[in-house]
Image (tube, rainbow, N blue to C red; front, side):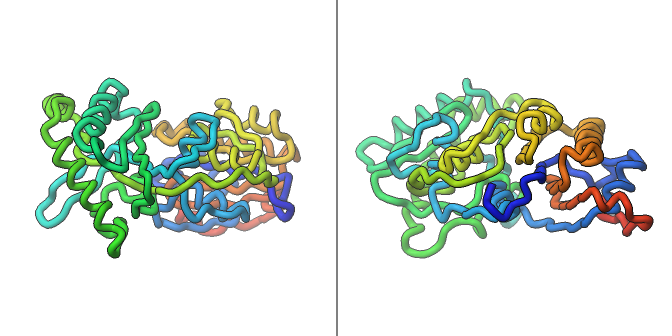
Length: 319
């Protein structure tokens, strides 16, 4: 936590709140008294958190930070993330679909990366590697890569997010070779037969070297996100897995914390439960301020003093 940050604040990433997901009238009224804003732009998650916390955002090396978060050791070579995606041909463009880890079992991912390493990396100054559910490209010399992860590009044409300029030629050449190698792989043919999206490309992003470890005060982190782990590790800051409830986060870090709730849980009662926990933490004076970042772009800043408001602003953002 940097010196200007309120140490009695919880910064919490929550499921989407719009689209009628929050039906509890008392919770809607509670949020409607807060300072609400909306930013629909898809953005890389670490960038959002560092902006909120007033912390430096890495100029490069996001993939190396993610690997650091997976292994606990700082990588010492140039690395880019190589995340599986499905490129869907449409009438006049390609549409990129980000494939979550849960959509691709290791039994599918392993042979695909083994195939790429065997067919494309021989005699080259780069190679492919898989670490758990994550893919990587290691290179002896830097390669231009995309700046954002595939979930930012999801459901959009990928060309607008690709690197440009002379240094981007190698990037596009590697992508073309990857797509040719994956096109008719047995794993993808089987996935199509099963009605699953094929892994017909990789999204190369976040290339660079890992930063040196530089101790920096940051609030404790509770999440299941390798990139966030790596960033916190690079600052010698405290991080732990998502414990299951926000009350447990507050018990472990009573003076404030950052919590990232699981991303893919569409149940309405899950969001309601999180908000009830947070309201109770605020009312019990265990926290003085909440910054709530909903995954659909709604932001709510809630303070204890907001409960004294007798008026309600238009809660159109919660509709």
